[in-house]
Image: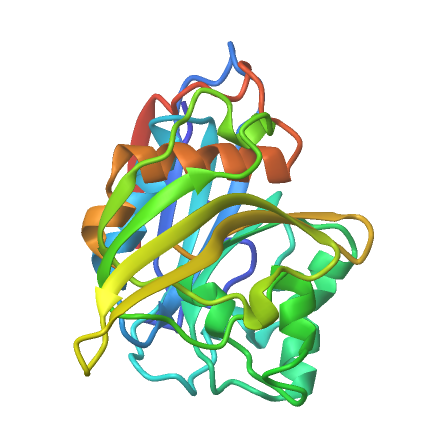
Length: 280
């Protein structure tokens, strides 16, 4: 067993960047999937959620992680991982969990999307849908083409009832719907996904507005997208609060979504990493 020592060229000078590498005995399950988790920005407990996501997924699948965490808690700061053109080199999948709606420079957004346009799979979690609101927002932006949905707002924090739309999809095999704790229901602008995306799970919230009137809101909360005709993307707008991110049902869902994105949703890769090492 050897310690992973390569950090894929990321500059050590950025204190905001931390790395987590999962090591184990992979002989019986083949090579691990190399995943980069990008997170940070506004409105969420990212220091806790990075641990919940990476450890939760790697208890379920043979995934090796690098974390690019930006502690800036605003919406305008670019995660330092994106400063290099080669930011995605060496990874099999990128998990986007950043919250930076006011990073709008088209050149930066093109740099972020470039490896995905070439076929690098992506997973988008929660506020990843509400980032990079460049020219064309709210109708259509390059980021929406990647995520698969134009989402512009969310409702109050109340429980969301989840119902499977495509229960036969491999991502949902063996899973079942549930009702979350207090969570944010992201909207689907125009009430639907874009034409390259396919729904998996629908969410419903019932709450009272400021006038005391009962409101029922529904939206797709998990889906797949085929980006640029060749890139698999799994996305879910769920995951605001730690209780949801740490829920076994949520972790089962995003684990299977990640494996689907890299076309390795099989028993060989549904094996946990044997050991976790954290290197910062």
